Image (cartoon, rainbow, N blue to C red; front, side, top):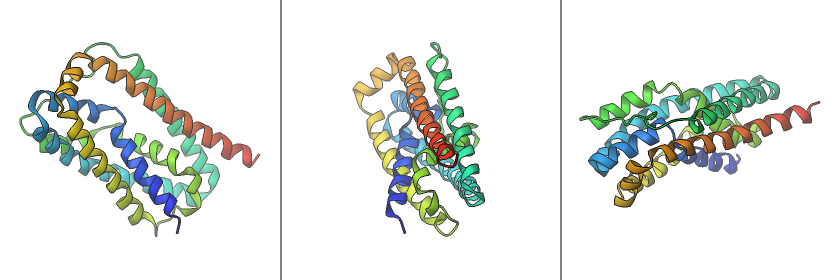
Length: 209
């Protein structure tokens, strides 16, 4: 058993939540106008979607990994390209491009937002692939429940931090004033993780060349 795999999975869960994106922007917008309780209900609902898409991501990663390292590297390559695409798109965003999600029912909004977010699956696959690629031999169906539990720990840690941070008065003021800057940080984060995924895939191909 490689404990490093589970540590990296938890870290991937933390970074998956903390990386700015649609849910990140929705949480900060909601907390800026309605405070931490609304933000906490939103992320609590969104956690259901995070777990759902992460379970599918692990199913894809483990399935591809057991079919062979070449397909695993192809998955990393495709996901890396997708993250870079999202990053460039975010970097090119304009004022008002990321409309805040406002709702009188934050919990249900979080659930629906998490389950219907079209970027959740490919981004989760890319994120977990990028950070667990060096532990590919430990990715198995037997380890899947522990991997999901590790990701859940990471999600909860990151959600607690985000709700706390989003409710800070200076953060709320800053977000309302500089939402476009934060949106463009999405680009930097996604491009960075996309580049890592591409590098790891490239090394895998090179080692078998």
